[in-house]
Image (cartoon, rainbow, N blue to C red; front, side):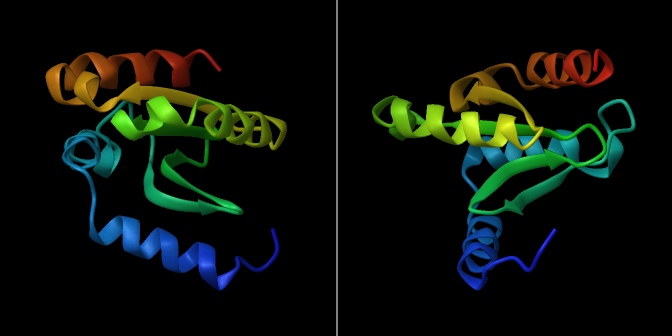
Length: 116
């Protein structure tokens, strides 16, 4: 992989400093290999995008989507197409799913990762 553009790195840093409540809750579950021993990174640069959570070993990205994503369906679809073409498996969860059922979300993530 080549050099990551400064703009992508800065965006990742900014997103890490100011997580949404759902991202904070999900990170609490994913960090320190708590989900099946899989290692995750948060706000991982995957130029030209920044992945909310990335498991490099499984080449899987976990995305937390809020209300704003209801208006960006086309852009999200293009992003997912690009990342899938790069070999990423994309798992998307709405913020309310993460906040209301974090263990269910973690279980779904584990099932997908172990089925690869």
